[in-house]
Length: 197
Image 1: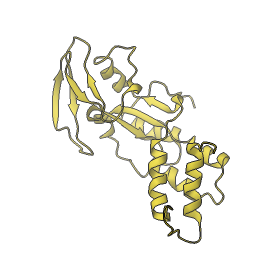
Image 2: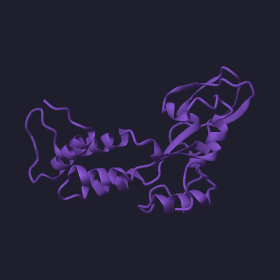
Image 3: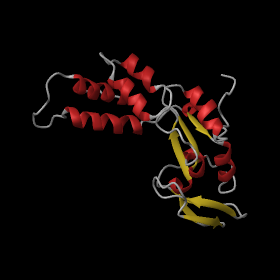
């Protein structure tokens, strides 16, 4: 049996969702479950490295926590991060979707914190828009699915930067417009983004 790629799995879920009849057989996935699994699958896809952006402020904070050679993109979600550099740095710690920090901490060498309490990964084009575009495909295939998935990009920023963004869901389906208007309004500057686009 040949291996399925994640693209094939996305297409499989889309085909279930597009079917006229609901599957009720043992060991089958129904429409509602396929929508849930599609959502989770697309959110967990590894993106090409050029689709991950880093804010200037996040880089500055990271540079006071870890050595420059220690790539911030090696850390995710619940990863424990240990401060390796000597100088103290003040960080704000957030829980979940809280708008305000639950604590402000001065990190010293060897102190630890949970990555997502300080840093946030923002899907620049909201995942809801990406998923809606996938769900609107009449005949999903590798080409048209990949074309939509290529629109996914993430900006890694400080949680405090993310909390300033007012337009979270009502965004255009346009990466450049979001970065150059919504992010710019909150002075979120991306280091590896070509602003001349």
